[in-house]
Amino acid sequence: MKTLKIGNLLARIPIVQGGMGVGVSLSGLASAVASEGGIGVISSAGLGAIYHDYSSDYDKASIWGLREELRKARERTRGIIGVNVMVAMSNFADMVRTAVAEKADIIFSGAGLPLNLPSFLTEGSRTKLAPIVSSARAARLLCEKWFGNYGYIPDAVVVEGPKAGGHLGYKEEQIGDAHYALETLVPQIVAEVRDFETAHGCHIPVIAAGGIYTGEDIYRIMELGADGVQMGTRFVTTDECDADPAFKQSYIDATEQDIEIIRSPVGMPGRAIRNSFLDRVRDGLKRPKNCPFNCIRTCDVTHSPYCIMLALYNAFLGKLRNGYAFAGANAWRAEKIQSVKELIGGLKREYDEFSLRDKLFGAKQ
Image 1 (spheres, rainbow, N blue to C red):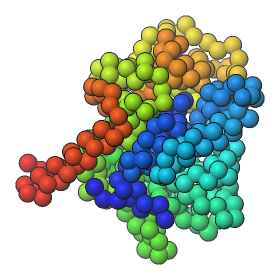
Image 2 (image 1 turned 180 degrees about the vertical axis):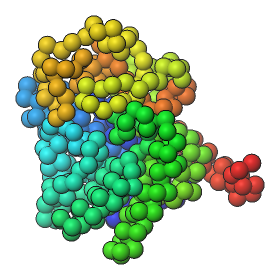
Image 3 (image 1 turned 135 degrees about the horizontal axis):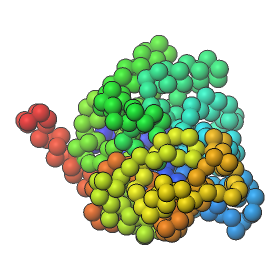
C-alpha cells in the first residue's frame, strides 16, 4: 500500500478510521489504528452524554470528554490522531476549538458544509483540516470559500459515498442511484481538486469513504485517483472498538436484509441495522417528552419520534432494546471480532494480492 501524506503528517498505510458516534470510536479504537500506521479518529458526537458524571451540563461535559479522549489516545500511541466534528452539532464550535487547543493532528468535518472551519485555527496551531463532501460541486465550493475567505487550502478532502453508515449527505432517491456511487464521484472530485491544485500550486489528498470493505476495494478506489480511504464499519468488529460487545455482535448477527435506510430525527436519511427499537418507532410507540441535550441543530423534539442521542448512547452501552446501531452497507458481511492489527494485516494482504493479480492479468478478468 502507498503511504498517505497530509501536509507534514505521514500515515504508513492510506487508511483513515472513520469517526463513529456515539462512543463507537473513542481513544481505544483511534489509538490502535494510529499505532498500526493509519489515522485514528475520535468522534466528538455525544461526549457530553458519555462524560455526564463530570458535569450535568452537556456542553461542559463534551469539552472535558474530548480533552480526556485525546489525552488517553496520546498516552497509548505516537501515531496520527484526528477528531470528527459534525457541522450539525450544536456544540460544533466548542468541539473544534477544543480539538485545536489540544493539538489534535487533524479535524474531519461533515454532516453539513464546514464553511467557517479555518476561522477556528489559532496562531501556531498545527491541526490539519479535512472537510467531508458528497459532490464535486461541494468540493469546489469549499476550496474556493476557504481560500477566498481565509487564505486557507484544505489539507485533505474526504468524499463520502452513499454506502456509508450513519447519517448520509444524500436524498433518499440518490442513495441507490449509480450517478452518486462512490466509483462515480471519486474521479469527478479528484478532477475538481486537481484543477484547484494546478491553479494554486498545492496538493490536496482525496480520501474515499463509504462502502469500502476489503483490500481489493481499497486498491480499486485508489486506482480511480483516491490518495487514501476512510473505513468505519470494518473497525466496529474489532477488540479495540470502544462500543459494548453487544453493539459489535449486532453487526455479526445482521443479514443483508437487516441493513436499512431510516429517517433520522435530525432531518437526514441514515443507514442502520434493523432491530426491535426501530420496529417500535415505525409502529409509533416512541415519542420523546423533552430534549435533554439540544445536541443537533436540526432536531425538533416536537416532531421527533425519539431522541437520537439517547438511542445511540444506549446502543453504545449495548442496550439495543432502547437504541440501534448505525452501520455501513456492508456491515452484514462481518463474521468475527478481531484485533485492529489482524484487520489491517488482512487488508494489506488482500490489497497486495489483488495488486499483483491486476499487474499480471488485469483487474477485468
